[in-house]
Length: 160
Length: 391
Image (cartoon, rainbow over all chains, first blue to last red; front, top):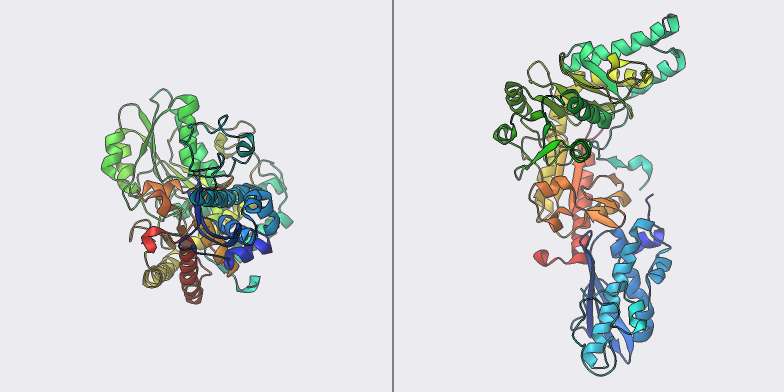
């Protein structure tokens, strides 16, 4: 009927976890500057696990389906496991997206990672840049000044 | 929803082939295999069909047969008009004037002439309804200008341009005037006897003819250089063996369109206005795009802030409606349409554009079904996006 899988259409027509956790333990956004689509994810964390994740998306079918699927994947996971969720996991949950729509999965992951980072910062457990306290001043060029592990996850880890 | 109950509201993209057209084309394919350039009976039979179609197209435009050049469609007609004129008038000047809301077949061709052949290109802005004024065009003309190209009816927002007045200004300045009338020929009256115009692009599949065939009207005496060289068909202006079946289809489609134009234009205008009223009544914040009255009879186009066009199109497709959005969603990008942006609409609002275009087969029940289906979809997408303006 169209270029999307049944799973993607299901997430699009009956999106899970629309809205915002209020007040959130963590909040993150990511956007695709080339098209103006954007997603915000808010989460509540209990005992180091994502107890609730909600999203808002202004965007296309793929952007909405990706955010919906990702909030499902994140719920119940430890903060560490949730941080490891990647665009591949979203695509897997959706049974794939048209190739030109794959950046939409990346945007959802970027928003979630930003929300999880926000949790760490708020709880003083250390942000992405090491234990203990708030983020140091942001380097203008992210490459080279971060720990290698963080540099690897930089694509999609939107802090915009 | 199954195929039988689908509602097609995208007649600006293309129209279904009229049964009479399909029948005439099938007959040509079955019975007339000759090459129109051959002198024996089979060739002469094919030539007669091409000539008859040429007369039908000419008659509908108020032109004479020798002024019609058959092409592969609207894009080729636009390319032939722009490139052919620019090459033919090279000694006269290098200036081309066009508008920001043209189809890419004109806009990108003009840009290509500027990039590669150093044409001096002026792209005129439009007002918030998508109209360009005669005074804007006049102000842009100077001794270097050789060609003005202004479309007749806009394919996305339906706005009609004052081409008769623009044509008169061009004629007074000795400038060749072209109009892409792909959306209007067959839909609204177009008479080259009353419009001072040199070149007009026509496309069969916009008025219930086949895809892959169109025409360029070339007023007698207009200088034009061919884009391709070969056997010299179409008086050397578009060489290559004629697409006989397609040309016959174009001729029949043009004749039918002319016969039905008056009654269909009135009927489709009523359906279009029913869409306007219904949508403004049922969808809060709906924004009309294009001119409220100076527009194509079949075009109802909008922006719905807080939604994104591709999502609207997919959601409506799932409910059985075929519609279009101005945002072309490619390579992960949903670039808002250049036309909607040219109206001065904010980028984010422009993303939520939707174009509904009715046609011969559209009924009041189809329109009412759309009016039922659309409001909850807009509401759902807005609840997902929760854009600040709409909270």
